[in-house]
Length: 96
Image (cartoon, rainbow, N blue to C red; front, side, top):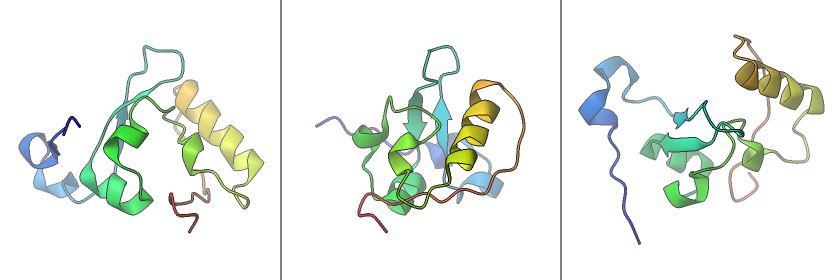
């Protein structure tokens, strides 16, 4: 199995090293995730290989109580390059 190191400490300032995040490629159709830090993996319960190439709208984190309107707003913001503040319920891999 290929192990991709967490580059957070190497390339990011101290102020963002403890944040959980993904980086996506906006030049491909689904705006695929090309990197996620260890904090994001720990928070969601997914491994880095599970997350790579998934849409940056994080559809894989949706669950029964994820509001459909919130899903649409996130997609519009991300895919339309708009800034929005959206409250959305995401789920960990274990369903929590």
